[in-house]
Image (tube, rainbow, N blue to C red; front, side):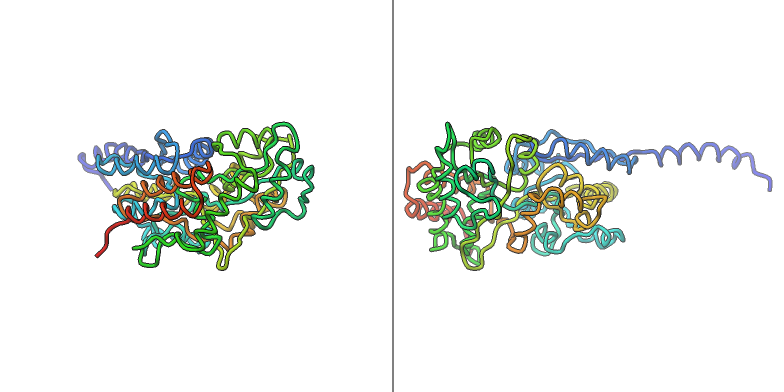
Length: 423
C-alpha cells in the first residue's frame, strides 16, 4: 500500500505528540498534620507510591501542627479555592468538612475499582470514615487509648507486669506507690489534653455516657455518667498524685524513666519505643472500662480527596488506596503504634504477622477493638470552639481550681450555648 505525501508526514508528527501526552505527570498536592509522628512516614509512603506510579507525583504541603490546625487551614482554603487534592484529617473533623461539602464521597470510586475488594478493608474500621451515607475518608492510622507502664518502676512499687491494673482505682493505687519511690519519680499522667476532647470522650464513653442526646439538641455528658467521668479525672490528681504538667513534660519524664504510668494514644507507641531504647522495659495495658455498655473512642486520621477534577480524582484515589492498603498500612504500623484499616498485613508473614508476634505491646489496641466507638464530632459552626471550652473546664479540675461536679455543670451549660439552634 502506498502512502500519500500528506499521510507520510502525519505519522512522524503524531508520534511525538502521543508520547508527550503519555509522559505528562499528574502532580497532586497533599497535606497532613502532627509532623512529629508522620513526617518521615508520609515521605516514605509517597516515595514508594511514586516508584510504582511514575506518572503521578505527590507534592507535600508543609504539615500543620495538629488536627485542629489543619481543619482551620482547609476551611480557609475552601473559601480561597486553594484546597489540596488530598488531605489526612482527624476522624472527628470529617463532619465539619462534610457539612461544607468539601470532601469527595469515595463510594463511587471504590465501587468502580475492581481492586477495592482485595485491599482487606475492615467494615468496622471503614465505618469510622463515614459521615451519613458518604464514605468521607479511608482510615490511614487508627488508634485507641491505652496505658504505658515503666516496668522497672512498676516492679519496684510492688506491681505485677503479668497482671497490670484493670480499673482506675488500681491504676491510682499503683501510681501512688510509684510516686516518690525514688528521687524525682512521679506516679502517673493521664493526658486529658489530646486533640478533639478525645480523652474526655474516653472517660465519658467508658462510663456508659454520651456527648449529646440522640437528636443532638442537648448536652448529655452532664448526667451521672459524666459526673463519674469528671470525678475519675480528679481522682488521678487526688489519689494517683498526678501533677498539673503539660504533655511535653510528661513525654520527657517518661522517656527518661522518671514517670511510672502514662495514658496516651497507641499512636505514640512507635515514639515510645524509639525514645526509650533499652533504658527500661515498656509494657502497654488496656484502658479500664468501668461502666455498663462501656466504649472507647477510635482516634487517628483518614485519607480524603478534595479535588473535583476527574483525572486528578483518579490519581488521588490510587494514592489513597496505596497509603491505606496493605503496603502503606505495613509501613505505617512499623513507624507508629496505630492500627491499619486493612486486615491483610496482620495475616501475612512478609508484612506484619511476624512483627506483631515479636512486638506484643502493639497488640493491646487490637484486644480492645471490640469496645471501639466513633470519635464524636460536635455539630455546627462552633465545633472547634466547643473543644476549647471543654479543655478549659478540664484544666480547672486538674489544677484544683474547681470541684468536679461544679466544673461539669458549668461545662455542660457552656457547651449547650454553643450548639446549633434547631427549630
